Length: 123
Image 1 (cartoon, rainbow, N blue to C red):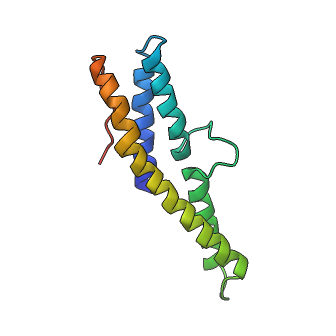
Image 2 (cartoon, rainbow, N blue to C red):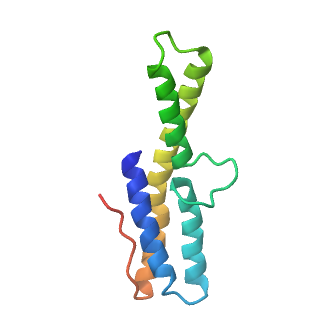
């Protein structure tokens, strides 16, 4: 998840840099739409109740700290919360793959057609 978080941060920086170059219009609306999708992977305007990368990472750290700090078997609540949080982490990773393979290439083709720099996802 750390790699996804870092990639998302770098993509967000590129989106912000391009946004300042765009006049109002369809391309800027498209860029804003992609930026909204990025909120799941980091940002300050994620939808209420959304399971974001930051929240999921925080939950995992908290749960693992609770498990490590006790010499007893995990409670049923900890087991359930851990399974749910791991599922959320996998779902977010899949969402990132979809974003990187569909949403971003669609935006990049429009940016390229407008003669602008495209967004690159770091390896």
